[in-house]
Image (cartoon, rainbow, N blue to C red; front, side):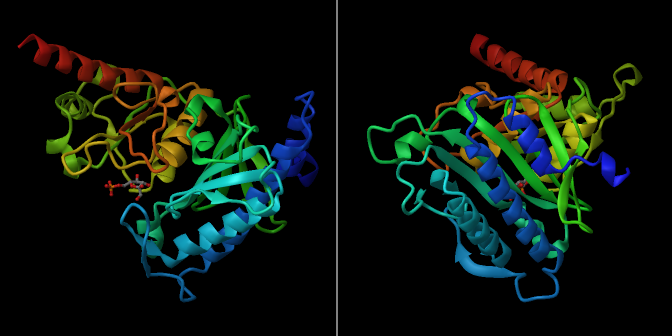
Length: 340
Ligand code: P6P
């Protein structure tokens, strides 16, 4: 594409801002800070094998997971950049037990929740990883910023997205007016519009789940996985199993091609493994804006009222008809059990 045709992220944000009559540019400043941080993390991810930032940082995060050095670096980089935007009063992160109150920003009106480096177990083996972010507007200005103001339902997000550090580095985000994808052109260090108006197919032929846990899944989910494997030409089955072990990578592929990602409850993870505030909610906002569905098995993800910062919730997300199919099997299973 000739450079004269390129639309940079900066230009796109300016154009989008002009669509909001009362926009003062606050959200744009937050996006610029996220973009800068992602370029720094991208640089570190690309050279991770060459400098001493691989391996375990030694600390463990609130999930009890070993923090890889790159996890900690990514958290610090995004924390500093978002704080410097001057628009954010609180930051939630998978890597921090408590809310981070931005110094001197008590009166600012935005809150950011993030997973600074999701899929970090893949860092050492060079599989795609990424940063997930979710932005809320503060609702209570009569009191000082507090955790309570962070625990908003996902349907109140003003923006959400992810940076994926894969074979190319991309940003995919929404502000509630559709989903757009930008690819980083390394030669000019600009994110350029490459995937305008992303929509996800209603049907797909890919299912993503850790089948190692199959016997622990709810009956209806086990039935759905068996359905995915059945031979039926008319419905393009058997589907293909694709599971990278990195939510962003599996979600991104399924978003573009069609498919379903599932992280059901298991015996060792009765509420699933993924976190509501900075994994489910941003991905659910994106997928619904692209025409897909995101469900916990008992509720629409975006309707769940958070009760704690690092709350885990089961997830079924992706192509509309595929999510509805597994939910239907889960409901009929529950009805059968109830009738016994
Ligand atoms: P499991 C990475 O740790 C992550 O949070 C997601 O990115 C990924 O999809 C999932 O966990 C993998 O979990 O239990 O299948 O290894």
